[in-house]
Image 1 (cartoon, rainbow, N blue to C red):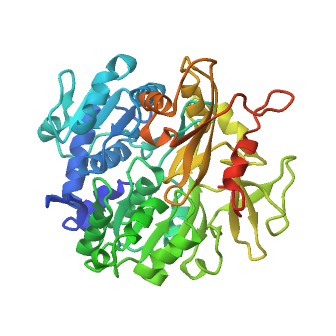
Image 2 (image 1 turned 90 degrees about the vertical axis):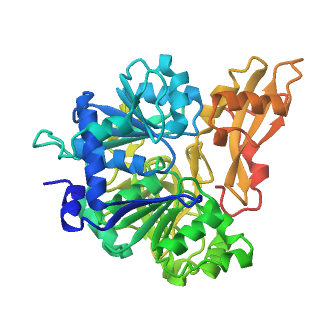
Image 3 (image 1 turned 90 degrees about the horizontal axis):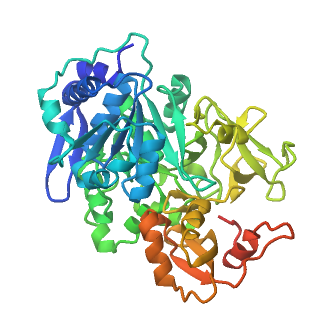
Length: 519
C-alpha cells in the first residue's frame, strides 16, 4: 500500500497540509503535494546517508515547525525509527537518549544545533547531524541545502517495508529514561473506531497545543494527517497567540494539558473577546487530569459540546474517553474504556478488583492493539509491568457502577507537572551526586497552576552550609528545567522502615491532606 501522504498528494494536492503561523506575521503553508515533495526529498537525503528500514534510528529535535512535520513523514515513509528529543533536556540527558537509542543520524533545528556541538564527543554512533531552518555549524550539514538538491521522487525502499516506528523516551523509575518503542502505523481498525467515536472528519483543522516531541500533541497530529486534515503549528505556546491562531484558521481540534488552557481561560475578558473560538469542536483534555474548576472555566469560553477527555500514556495509547455530556456529570472521571480497549484493576496479590467505588481500588492494567511493543534494550522493565497479558504504567484507579474510571493515585513514583511526566528517581540520582548532599527524597506536591510541582527533601552532609539556591543551581546543570525542584525542605534524617526503605508517603502526606485524590 502506498503511504497515505503519497495518496493525499494525488487526491487533494492543493489542500493545505501544514501551516506554520508565527506571531511576527510570517505564515508558511505547504499543500499536500508540496509536503509530499519535501518529505520525499528528506527521505532521499536520509537514504544517501545510509538510512535503512527498520534498523536505522533518527533523532529529531526542535520546536514545532514544518521541518519537524517533514521529518515525521519522511521517517514513516522510509520505515526507519524516529526518536523525538525533548529540546528542554540538559546536555547530559540529551547525550544519554541519543546514544542509548543507537541513532546514526540527528536532524535538528538550527536553534538547538549548539546542543549537539557540545555533546558531540558523547554520541560516537552519530555519523551525520543535519541542521534545518538555519546555518549549520562546522562539522554538521545543512538539511535545507541537501534537500534542495535531492530528488522529489518517492524514495526507493523494499516492497515489504513497514511504516516507520517511533521511540519516545519517558523518564525512568530507576534514574534513566526508557525508550518506548512502537512499530508500524498502529492498528487501523482501532484507530478507525476511535475516529468514529470522537467524530473526526477530513475537514477538521488540528492545532497541537504543546510540543510535538510529546506523545499527545504529536500522536494526534499523526492521526490528523492520516485523515487528510490541515495542521496548524504554533512554534512556541503563548496564550493570546493561541487564541489568534484558533480564530484566524478556524481551528476545530486540539489536544492539551491543563496548564495551557488555564492560561488561556485566565486572560482578561476583553482580550478573550477579541477572538472567535466558536469553531472548536474537539478539545481533547489530557496529559494530566483537568480539575472540575478548570473544566468549568473552559466551558464558559468554548462550545459546551467540544470538551472531551482522554486517559492514556506514551506506552499504552488512549485507554479511556470521557464524552462532552459527562464532563460535569462525572467529576474526577477519565471516562469509560475507549473502543477496542479492555481495562482491568488488580490488587497487590494479582487478584482482579471487581467492586465499585473508591473503597475498591486497584492498579489499572490495559489490553489493546495500541499498547507499545517494548522498552528498547530494557525488555525486563516491559515484562515487569505485565500481568495476565495486560500492561500497566502504575496508576491506581476505581470504577463506579456505570463503568466510569477514576484515577486516584499512582503506584509508581511519578510526578505530572504541566503535562510532563517526571520520575523522582532521576532527580534524586542527580541531587545525590552533589558532594554535600547525603540523601534526597523527591515527590510531587499539589499546584493549582501546574497540577503538581517538584518538591525535594534533602539531608545535607554535616557542616556543608548548603542552601536552597545552591541545590537549585546544581540541579539546573544536570536536569531539564521542568525537573528542577520548585521547593525544598531540609531534614536531619529521612523517615524509613526498619529494613531501611524510605517512607516517602509520610513525607508527601501533609501536602496532600484533605484532598480526594493524591495526584
